[in-house]
Amino acid sequence: MKPTMPGGRASIAAVAAIAAAALASGAGQTGEKGVRLVRDDANRRVDVIVDGQPFTAYIYPAALKKPVLFPIRTANGTLVTRGFPLEPREGERVDHPHQVGLWFTYGDVNGVDFWNNSDAIKPEDRPKMGTIVHKGVAAVHSGADRGELETDMDWTLADGQVVLKEHTTFVFRGGAGWRSIDRVTRLQALDGRVSLRDNKEGMFGMRVARQLEIPSQKPEVFADAAGRPTSVAVMNNEGVNGDYLTSEGRTGDAAWGTRAKWCALSAKIGSEPVTIAILDHPANPGFPTYWHARGYGLFSANPLGQKDLSGGRETLDFALGPRESATFRYRVVIFSVPADAARIEAAHTEFVAAYR
Image (cartoon, rainbow, N blue to C red; front, side):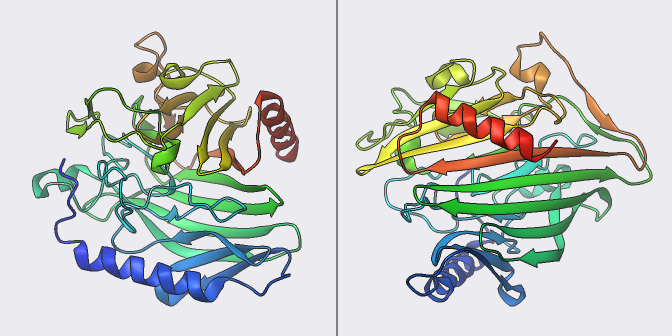
């Protein structure tokens, strides 16, 4: 898989220009409090403003194969998501062009790969790829302590057939030194059975800024479930100081392929201490989730890929019967103050209580 975006350069550039304009116009006046959502159907986005400052945006440009939240910032305005391919920044990696912002998708849905799809996919592989299509904004609410966005999406095959209906509620919050995102996603099968067989390419993930990566010591090649390789080179590690920590005490690269109810990624970006914690919920399928957390900056909870992530010791083979549904609940907390295991554990307890 090549990192270039054949056929998509104009649309990618347009997305970047729209994002810059939204950033310039979306920020509120000094002293503004609360969470404000700004819907912009013409530019296919909903911007999220916390206390007058840009936090993130729900975007669904034609250049992407799934809606995502992009970019994401700390309470201090520091970017914690990688810019490539929408807004490339100097010194960051340009691999895995499907890993944009914060997303929810999967690598095997009735044998079709939704995870790896992008404009970089070779023409002969496109019939094997799925696209998550934004269908509509069901509700937008701003508020003093939270903002909510409800969206509908279709999980669609290359021939246009819809295999899953998705309804997602996002909840955005923030305060001094922190921001948070809840994603509650209901997937519903239509008239046929939908199989989400064990696959390491999943499910609720984000691609982080270069500083949050674990310093790389050697080049590596990662292959997706179809065997398509992507090379990840050794790069200049100046300013790169990320480290993982799970609720079970796993750190660094040892977090990958292990179960835990939460996983945190911490680093200093300049002088700012940053911790991103992804929290799993006990009511989710596959709890406690496995972590598809790579040192090169992929940070993902994968509750369904148990066979691949356990080395064959466990198998889930999750499926939905006709008209059956399943709900997945996650919270992402972004601290711009020191956050140890006790603080993250407290955040997890609060999250569990919010969705009983």
